[in-house]
Length: 155
Image (cartoon, rainbow, N blue to C red):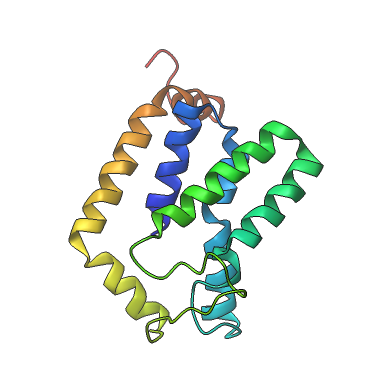
């Protein structure tokens, strides 16, 4: 789920010193591509296809590297690859279209969301990772919220 991907990337930002914006954007990019293509546009048979491939990871990393430089490219690659690794446990089409993959029957968005929310071990893991990420990033969050006037100074 989205929270788990964001939490893992936030922790990578904190502990691997990856740039915040590229790693967080890469955390959601595979799902943004594939879920929109599947659920919104009806153009893919699965919510995991082109965005969940090594080809897309390499291509998008090369683009980020060329436009924003080495550190942003490294941060993007780390966020993207950790997204794919976190999705292991169900079909991840690493080598699509060069290899065939058998996807489980597609469910509606609502059914998929409900199944994710009622998978309690996975949900608990994502909530724990999210809590760890918030605690690990508390100083940064506090500073940013103070700039916006949403956190008292000195608190």
